[in-house]
Image 1: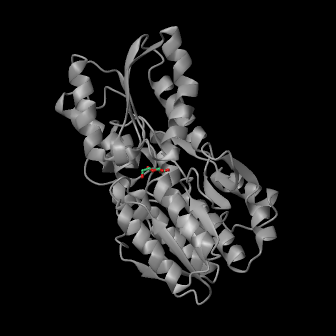
Image 2 (image 1 turned 90 degrees about the vertical axis):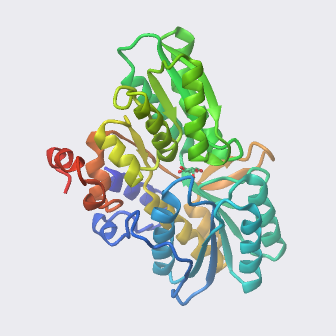
Length: 375
Ligand code: BGC
């Protein structure tokens, strides 16, 4: 299914993103494969700088994005320099300065927040270096291109997941643990969730206890905040919107302490190994699988074209459009489709090469995997 959708997408824009072959996924290093060192590529071609935002907010950045961007850029003949700012805005700027002075031809930015992302893009622009916003759009920024997922849809899938899980529980009490208010994606996820949940809150089918954004997507803070809200609500909760798998994990730890794990559906996102294990165990109702390999390949393809100054070619790929709600600018975009993943969908994530069965089918989960045909 996923391959088909991407094939259509690639055909639709008249380029081969080379993301369609299932077999190609097999070579993808999977999450947790330990490739955490900074990479200076051997692609031989134009130097491209890539700055990732964090490691602690989600296992995706080092586990999926980094190895997949590296492979995709090398396949494009580029020479990638991929660094992670570890949530430190100062470090983010310093890394960008270093890459700009090294003479990168293109800069790919997945920023900690819009402010630092926009500042870096402006600096690059002043030196004539094109920038691509990766995954997170920098509001008020100047990047001509944006590669990401349909992030409102991600939120809708989370809302749908929770609504389905609670459909027989009239008046179920819901706590929402949201992402960082400084990440435009967190706003889009929230907007998508509310498309589904707000009518249910309004009708009384569900009852919102509280919705709380978590600064910096800090998983630990998410757990502490959830516990406080739960306690203030007399220990009562029937469902939790957790904006990603990291926050879901922190919520589940608190639920477990209260004997509620497995009884209270929790949402997530990123299809991380821990998230998938929680789904298999029944502690997390769903995650959202985002084919990051396609995101990485889209960014690499765009970077290769921009490095050659081929903006017409880049425009053929980035046929979508995203609103920068701060500046009112429309940013040319390549947006990929996310997928709702419950227990039955874990097999597809494994067969797509994102996560190895040996990583998630351990201990108590070996039997669950066997039952679901995951190997
Ligand atoms: C990404 C999510 C990720 C979150 C925290 C968001 O911008 O889209 O995939 O879980 O940041 O890192």
